Length: 474
Image 1 (spheres, rainbow, N blue to C red):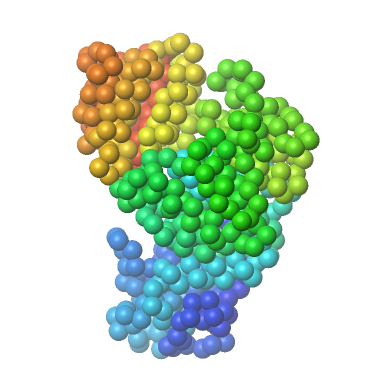
Image 2 (image 1 turned 120 degrees about the vertical axis):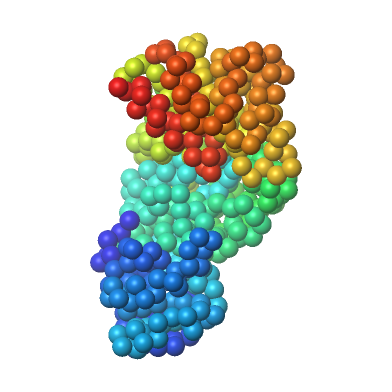
């Protein structure tokens, strides 16, 4: 992220113009550098926005930030009476009241995006958002100063915090948009106002809030409504739902994929899974890419990034340099080789049915006939179809040839039943807590095993990876 001194400064009038708020105390002549929401990290030159979240209410820390030397607050109108009036008056603190502080944070980010003279790429999709965003950044950064979040900042708080880090030096910003309900992508796209919008794919994720895959398609398509005039839409030609969306657009559409209908194509070279190589074909050029990431879905992500590069006028050679500099994001198909000889695939950041199946395919390719083990946690937010979708993962694991499967979570029985239905020996299915799984893994694993660990973010499956990695490296 940018240094505080590099940021575009904020006047009180800027804040009022951005938020539509009301100045209730302090001097209108004050200025601020950064914008923050964490009372523990705020600096004296920053503006503090008091976010009211499910776990903490920033208004409760107003006295602390004033005592730390901060001279500017954005607060909810309904919380004004709870704030330390004496401290505000004594220290001439600027206090701006708004109807909704989370919305105000987004409005300030949108204001900052407009005045920063940057172009924006926004990525959404059921799978691959973060890796695709990182690949796009690697390509664009070869020519231009590019802002992108260092973490998974893809919601109504994280996206604004990213855009508030824009500096006069930046020329591009690459962001991702996440969601679990209708309207969320639309709001995020309003904030970032993209010049290029990408949907990587559409699959069964967040069904609890969206009802069906068609609901997912509708929610993801909200991005396409908010692309700026003259912008470009980039869609996956190999995904039937994104391809369907491509037929309804007024703005230019660029398609990527492995099939003949794609404008930006990938062609497999037949290399082993340990070296993810493919031929990139862009109009008028083709070049071999050696991607330092495993899984066929990573090639799809790379093609999306290549489409952005092509749209921006990059040569195939420049795109190659960017893509080959990419390294997997933590918790997303990270291959860990231990001193014991055990190979661990850490894909613990998140999970849904499509990404779980893709991870199983990748495990089997990488193992190249060696014995394979899987640790699976629940896939969350799947609604009424959750049990059936977990059952399918059990079937997939058994049919793929996974030798032993460890399962934890509320849907352990469904995964186990799926594996049993395909003839997997019950003695090779272990259900229990992560503590129990780790204990058994240490008794079972040998140096030639390949181990995949995967589950939704809320399952915190990285605990298993950490314990087994430390044990296997002794």
